[in-house]
Length: 176
Image (tube, rainbow, N blue to C red; front, side):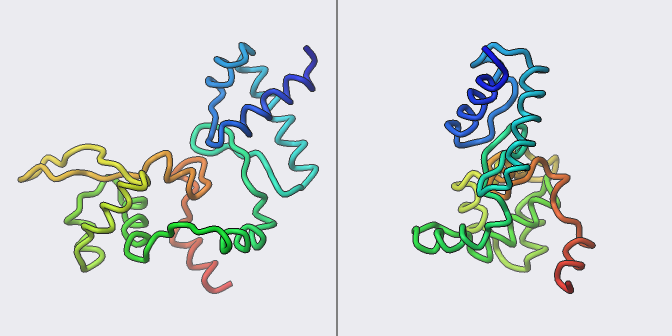
């Protein structure tokens, strides 16, 4: 089997998965060595980049996924308007941002930052699997500690939490 056929197989695995697919999963499915998979993926990603089409392959949340090219975001927004989609409320987004930047964090700390009760927002985020209980704090009552999930990374197209914008980045974008 030549490299083109192997790349085609990796491409279809990533496409069919619908979620980030790890190199170890690709190895398990194909039997190819991890080093070869990584080299083939690098070539495939470069081909997609050179093509500069509507879809790209990106490393996200410990795996590889096909995503829409950010250059065509306006078209994705247009199609999303025609498709009913549950969006996050402002309260849920605020709560999610606090958890993402302050994790692990307890509900009382979230409520203190927001200035209001966050029960509903936390429940929604847990249901959507954007956050999870990561443990219990060594404090009276042993409150739950919350953190983000792999689904959070996927939802926002992040490779890992280090890709979250810093306060400095957000300030620059606001005034740009």
